[in-house]
Length: 283
Image 1: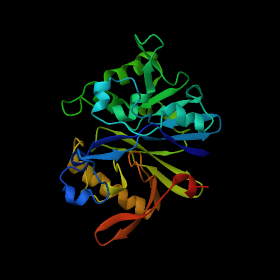
Image 2: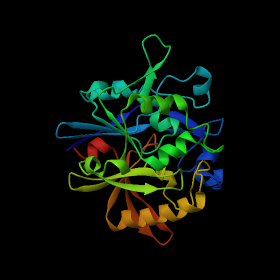
Image 3: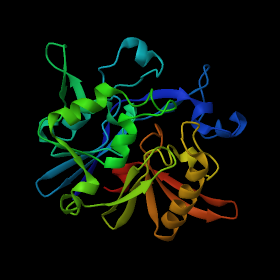
Image 4: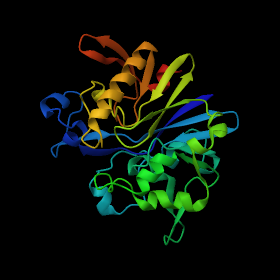
């Protein structure tokens, strides 16, 4: 098995929203903001190659939304989904599976794109199965008012219409072939799925929006976007206890400046021990 990081493009979000009730005087130490209170974020996906399979975990924001839409998120940098795949020697047509941690626009937007005439949508990965789960799909397609702006129909419905949508809970035989364990968490959104892998002698957790950045490791540091923040506290504490006990490395999807981190226990709880560049660590 071989893993690759796929950087699909950086963006910014309000630091206060990203850290909920934690005061700016505290969160800005790890995640400094710009003049408009926005912090740097990544949309870092994970590409897993094993056998003749090529599975992409999440797909970033994409580029089909309007200029007005993207103006709220201040995209920056030179990364792109297709460019990152090409740098690893792959194309979109090579992807056999797309696995969504969840269906918020910054995790699924790259999976659907405009057709050549720009009068309709087509799947970015035409040869892939697209993986979600039944409970989260229902949650996303019948959104609550709090999350409605994050579940965009143009990112979701074309997948269902294509016939290439698969649910993990309806195809356990196929999911059993995946080279990772799935952990389900419900605090951020219903049935978010986190892949846990064994890779080159290490335990690796792709933590998606359970722990958005290295600055979010302390248990009370919960995003204002979470639908059930008190549940996130419980899930996060349990996950970090397991991660520490089993010596997980955390792979961050949204930390623009830290890719990988080890953990240590302290009297204040689990904290970051060291951060690493992914390719250097696994070289």
